[in-house]
Image (spheres, rainbow, N blue to C red):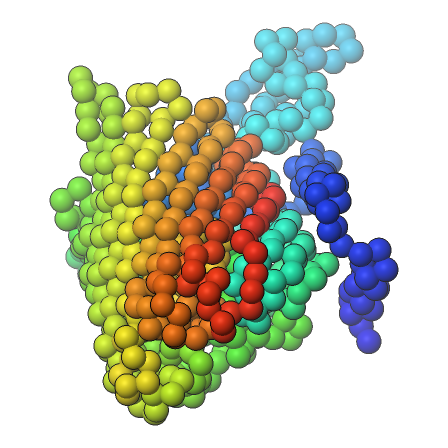
Length: 585
């Protein structure tokens, strides 16, 4: 037995002896301990400059703004990739990686305070301020506060560094801790007990290359500790390689370049309803294969052929303690094109083909083609040259067809399914606290008769469900109607408060309820379509561009479609709270 496994068994034995928090006082004490742990994480940059952490993927001001113009609030602060971790479709370059953080702080000269007073100029770059000048512009050993105030990552001096000739390298990475306390979610095995656990991940990276060819390697160590219920595939992946690929320029054209990429990578397209690297998951979601992409001022066009890799991409590939290998039963391919000069936004068209040659009878998979289009944008309304309000919108429609084998309908059933998403909102830029309000509607088709030889239930493939269908993560968008109103305010420059309300119905009463993993729950004979309402409260504090803290509290009140469903274990209403700290280096 490894030392790691012995340690984890010892931890589990200790927890069994002492028990888990069961009443409100014990729960409160547990939260205080976790809050203290998160605050200790915030002190890491002060205590040691050699520590590592995770890039914040959105700026202070954008912490609760729209995803790619979609008008949907970013829930976790690390839900949009840093430049160093951009998935396919984002096209990072070595140069952009060095400049993707907040604007550089221009070094200024300050007079040092020594025992004899001011006796000479010293540089202050906003990160390593060791002395306070007579003008107070730099600090006399003010305990690392400059590090917390700087928008530069810890290893900013190792970004975009010359190696030889025109070859440059960048080094960095990230770290994230999240405490979770949840009860009565629609988990895959139907458990209704409370589950409290801790999630931790570290993701260092190295990139070397020039404009013609570059290599990128990113490792991951993602761990889950103290869970009361079985670990989920998205929670743990120990000492593995998250991404490694070679990216090369294949063709220079007048309008842009054609590049190729081969290896292990992220994929992220459009509004992420169908393809996402799932950064909310402790493990991310990755793929292995190749892609070709073209980018110009007018068009972005991507084509790819990959296989799903880790547990977040394919449950059958869950290998938390060994090197990840792709799921050989699945080939995922497609083309995604974006016209970037559409009026006030961009227009996307896409074709995705997920071919599962070993379909599971209790999953919506099979060989499915998904074609669709999306229009997303924003419009800034001005008065006397000042932006007074900003309108945003994101509309997407998709049709799905192919063959599948599902439950009692028999083999090779014809698939005819679809989805519609609409999001629209407004931000009052000149009103105190910059309030934002938006509405969301989602329809993911269901099946009126799952046993008739045809499949009308949508599969959302590899989605970012956490960001759309409720932050408590009960659903994956299949056989689902979601009506949502969401609001956010900024009472301070670095603080964002958000509230989301959802009303969920089954799209078709005769189909199943599908949980976040796509598993069909219960039976199809329950008369009610209503499956519940959800309220999400979220507070995000961005210490700087690389360090953020987030607290979320969510409630779910189950409707008759769950409460009266004999096939779903009886449960009280669900709740979840988490505390998360994210730091980039």
